[in-house]
Image (cartoon, rainbow, N blue to C red; front, top):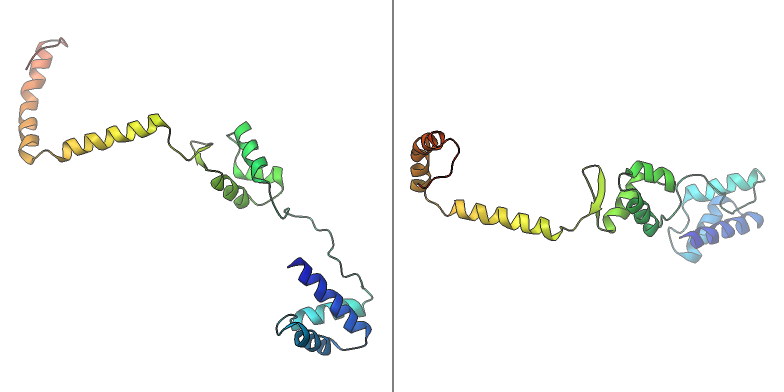
Length: 171
């Protein structure tokens, strides 16, 4: 894309130096390089610059975000300081915070409890989730009568616990 812009600018400057109008330049370039290569706005903008004796067609250095943020550098910064927010990182890397979020998500990180952590579950987390599912399956397998019986026995069992003053006993 950058090379195309440079070529178009050079062609526009060449057409200007030949004494052609902006419209003629646009038509000539579009005829040679394909329809829609140069828009009317682009041709007229550059011709306005050339008439003002601004003949430099190179891009000026601009402030703002760099074109590409190094994902490895962002991940290393997060691993060194996991509590850094995307806005803090964006300020350090001189870019938009959404670009930082994308880089971290691509690297398998997510924001959790005010820290960047790996997206993948640890073995302990996986076991805990399996236990929860197993418990849910146990309770889902019971019929209404099992629950009704347990609720009706609750008062009697509670009295027995109170009478034993916290000691273990058999039912």
